[in-house]
Length: 534
View 1 (cartoon, rainbow, N blue to C red):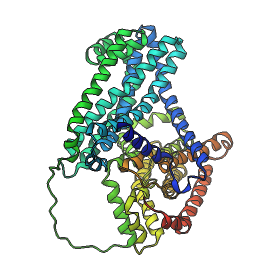
View 2: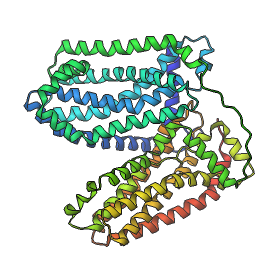
View 3: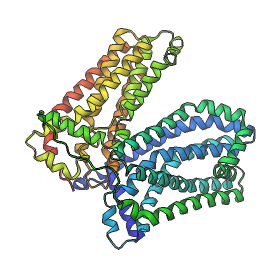
View 4: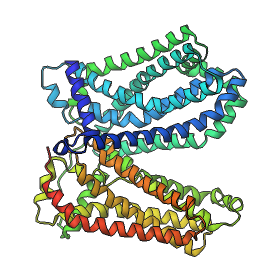
């Protein structure tokens, strides 16, 4: 039974990335190549980011004979990244899946249902872990040399790490589910906890330079703290660095015991957790006057309520704007963060204006509200198709939602940063206009791509928001646009005026926006009417 459930889980996950059944015979190889290139791009980005950080840490710790601390730190960072990336997916997959009650009504033991889902999540955890541990291993063994035994210990320890992460993720996910089930507005707690985790992670990453310096200068004291308070990480590091079988076994016992303990606790209470009646106060109906709205306004309100009512949707599809809000507050509090750059750039306002424009557009690439918006209609797609409203109005309402949620914050950030950096007026105007037009571009691109790659056979919305092909194509496609435009200027047109080049980019993006806007009223409307939810 466990094997059958596992096949179903992995088939569902594979479908979230690859399947388009109506066109399976056409372009299958092209989609596979495209997905492979996207994954390769992500891997390269993480290798560069973590590789540069581990390069500053490797040799200094080796010189003071604390190689084990290098691996312990890399293991902890991998633990943190995997936990933050997967804890809410764990909560949704285990306790909020739509088919929980259906499966529990069948003659299937709850431990098999739980086990199949935990194993799928474990496979995803391995991917997260490798994004950190692979660069750590490459940097260490390239810098100091590799031995077959050392690589064997490193691989075994790395493959065991997801067990510890998954155990902790399941425990926290269970607590979040338990608490949120007692609240009428459970999305509030999920949103707050998510933002706290993200804030903690970004704070630690921003302080990583100071942390590394303290580790190097106070290595012995840090080692004592690891042995006392983070002994699994200590076993992990010593086992790899010193090829110590005893410590490898101790680390293995810790990981297996933690995973098995959490699995036993959850498997015995899985039925009660997933079928428990919620204790939240019932909503009392209150008669209110109805307000008349236009079709466009009503559709916009419907999409907004759907968006704001799903914390995973907000956190995964609006991340760029969340980061911009943080940046705005930070700049208003500490203006010298940016003003310190002025002497370095020697008053070159146009140069820093280009950097600011690229940064804001790059963050806007993570605004993916429209990318899964059609797929999220799910089984209610027929309602949007049958209402007496043109299909273009339905599609454009989704575009307007992302524009309203993203453009004001991006423009405000551009104004605050531009004034702080004392950009020339023409450059400031171009930065504001271009970032606004680029946000329109990403919003339109999301709907157009989702029309081409919709997916309706999902068990929970998080799968579509985080893992669908349309989401990845929109994010990496818009990033590619920013990269190409930046490289064209840097390699071919660096002698041209930056303001004139941004004006040319503005014209190109505006033309693309007009084309996609008109497409939604023609070919897009025809494609939308032909969609069928499974």
